[in-house]
Length: 116
Length: 114
Image (tube, rainbow over all chains, first blue to last red):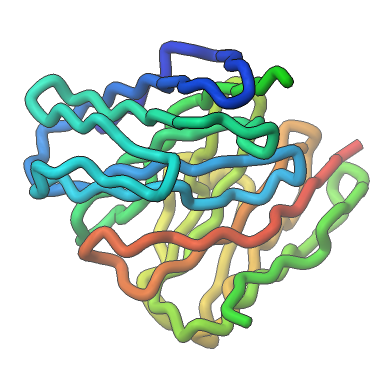
């Protein structure tokens, strides 16, 4: 079974600085997808960024970028120029490529605090 | 506006009283899924549906039922709720059940079972 591990239950960063959230996963599959979701206090699950495992290029979305290391099974999220609105719980998730039992497997989350 | 809606958003009930949480999407998505979120456990899949009349169990299906009679709706049924089903529930949908399609989440339903 696939597992996703987020080793940092909590992180903090100063406004305007950069923070990196860690995620590792375990799978025997070669084709899969990885995601970071953000959950602000409203509890809404918001997609931050998506990475295809077959792509070597790291995904970026404005201030958010990932460091995807397939061999190491690592998928960290870097937030640059942190803003107060970035404060949230962040979940790393793994998705298989299709077929039965198609589901997101989530890590337990990292709570990010942004200090003014 | 493309969205996944859930109702109710908040619910307090008592043990054994049957309840249904509705989920609807207006994006013509094939795939729909229910997750529950508990502190320290992340989100875990309860049931999923790959299309109309096609449903299957996820990781934590005990105590829940689902149906998919129409493409847009995927209700979650708790026949006899128990306190251990107190949780935050999310419905999600994606265009297809392959190809890594992004899953879009509803706003969540917070359930308290007394």
